[in-house]
Length: 356
Image (cartoon, rainbow, N blue to C red; front, side, top):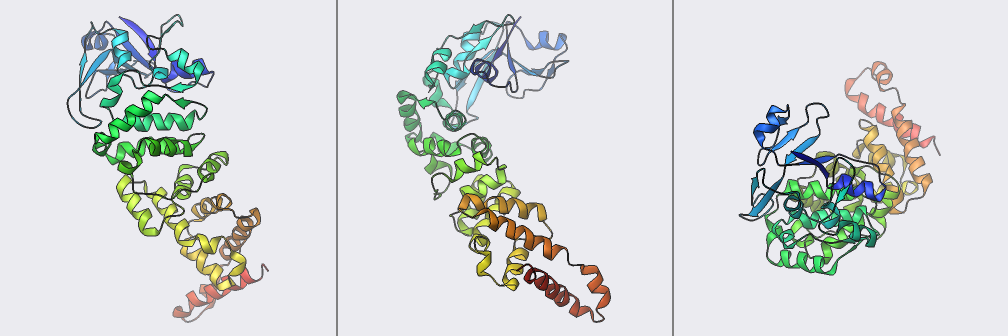
């Protein structure tokens, strides 16, 4: 049995980046031997085990063969005779197809170190075309490493995959998993540019109008995922946002924040053009009193859309003024129950008006 660290951990170490999750390949072993050594099996489709102490993942070296369309259309063969080189050959990009032994020596049969130095994203072998999710992964890596270019032959291969219809077989959850990671990368716009360049975007999600610079600005501002999704969809109609949310099965928080932004961005961007009554209406339509944290997150998207910092501050003051109204005291002071809501609203409008 020989154990090697593989994939992203090796790549990131060579790039001088902080280590993330570490994955290991075990060569020359079997499931029975792994179990006898105390490893816990977790893999459903192929033998993957958790280390008895570190709980890191250890996978038996394996090869794979295309058996159908899409991400799940593969059969796997894991056996003691499968070599490390054979296991690395099934990986997507050369920079992800390196291994490191226990002494720290790098095993690099496909030129990953050379491509790291040249800053090139290049597929390992023609088998890249067998898994359409690799188009998304490459686009995500392009967003994470924006200084890297895509090898022309890899770009041509991705276009060929799209023409063959492979991308249409990807399930929404897998697409969103990759898109969400790319959205949180250094330059999210690079991901969408690469998906457009390969023509994969047409098969992945409905057409989305994108303003250059905005998504990258969300990364510069360190905004969380829901805010980045809202900016991505900011120029859509509510109907288009709902279509994208349904198509990609977006998380509820991402969908809801995007809908709030597209429905209310005009009012949010010009509070001075609104009366105190309309300011309160906007606040309530955004559920800014009950969901103050989400309203704060919504406000964080406004500078990306061109709002001056004082607009965000102004809305924060409006929200605080309305929230400071003692609704309970008003309810106790009003004799007729049907008048309570009106009195509370009037008090909030007055509090907002007094900010001027």
